[in-house]
Length: 67
Image (tube, rainbow, N blue to C red):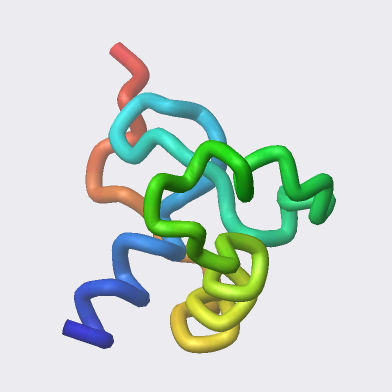
């Protein structure tokens, strides 16, 4: 699943066409997410750990979404 996670993570670019979301580098560690988590998880720390695991060279889609 690491290979699949890297592929998906490196498709994130904030355009919300295919894969909505941003990479961890958009997190400013404001911690507003912490009180919203019902499991009381350290979300910024988990995002940083996932980023280190998945970051790779940017991937290109086979189709760019433009018509």
